[in-house]
Length: 385
Image (spheres, helix red, strand yellow):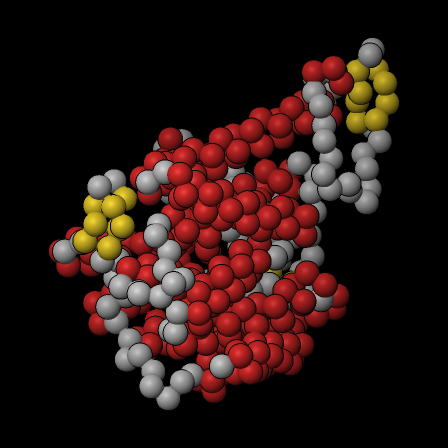
């Protein structure tokens, strides 16, 4: 099993690694690229079809190393992945309306929940709720799929963020699936991890072969991560393994703390401003970090480390509190941290504009930039030249 695990990772990595350069070449020739504008953080023209490589690495490697006795519901997962692949590819090449894209997401979620039985059936006592009847479980599971698919899609705004978070999630869940004997799901998670490692190589340090995953990639990641999270919560609830986790929904929250809390926060801001929850803006957490003078790699690394911290926090809280208290404390901690980061960013900008002096702000630069801004002293204040 250990050899199969590593072969799966290596195969998905090689498949993705090999196909990206040709995809970049074709994208450049056919002008299938992302062109910078006032809202986008990238400043160069970059191909956006990296999701094709992730799709190839994930699917081929999974099929090659899938155990003989495979769960029937996996057919529906691959069907949903194919749906997301084609709607994402069409959006990356031609651009389609949000309504059409959302309609296909509903179809994919329906296939997974109704036919594949990817359902939240147990809440482990969260807010006093344990077993869920189908009348509640089915619509709740569809809503979770739709929310997480879009949440992953929305955080794909800087290099390495969506892929880095998903790599962490798939690695953690893949390890759990293998240790509890759910090999088929372990194969999918590790194949995804291998593909993402290869994609990150080109997304972060690609040079002339730099590439974005586009909607093709983010929608695939969203549907796979959603399915794996829901399956983890279900399988854990009936597991007799020593690796059973007592507060599985809390771990799921901590693994996806960035997409969940950031999406809820951004949706709230947009609705408060009387805008559509899906209207684009620059209010995401990764936008705040970039505005605070971090590079893409620094911001993504910080948010992945942020996720690891919340996984450890959730694990610690689960030892002392019940799931409801732990769940609420994690959410409060996350939003409290984001609030402090937002306040710090506002102070940094005010300092750079000369609106406050150095005695009113303490700047701790955890990630020194290669090019530091130059300041001059004017009437006792630092002003940017």
